[in-house]
Length: 163
Image 1 (cartoon, rainbow, N blue to C red):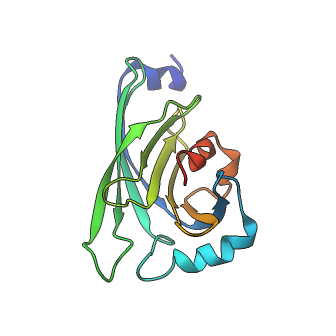
Image 2 (image 1 turned 45 degrees about the horizontal axis):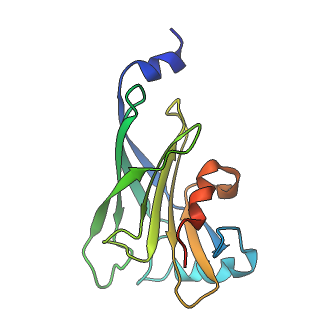
Image 3 (image 1 turned 90 degrees about the vertical axis):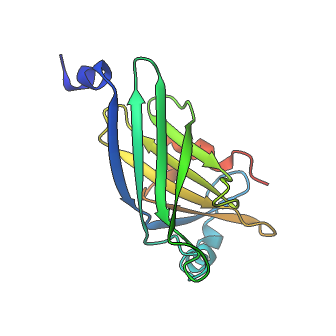
């Protein structure tokens, strides 16, 4: 049995830390919007909306055989000056091919954000991301652990339900 086969033989559980270290502005369609990335960098570094440079941790449980899976992502509060220390957000499976992908779209704790996590079938590569939705602006701000976020299948979730 190869390592890949072993991953599918029994449920896998884990905890994955990730540093949100990359910022990209996105259009309402979820495509990159380079002209507004500077504004996003300032926005996600501000004390009342701090996402850039924070460590997040995702707990996951995946049974590849039964396709039953769950995940939750913990992050410090982005509103450090006015709110509690942090949040744990339950993520739902997204059903994307060739990866285990999870998301929460406008969760109660962060109603102006999407929270996303994906991990490869061999459990070796993962990505965590928060998409900040900006009402009244033509762009949203993606903060991610992935230096190339638009080269992954998870990027399809960047446009889900944006207004």
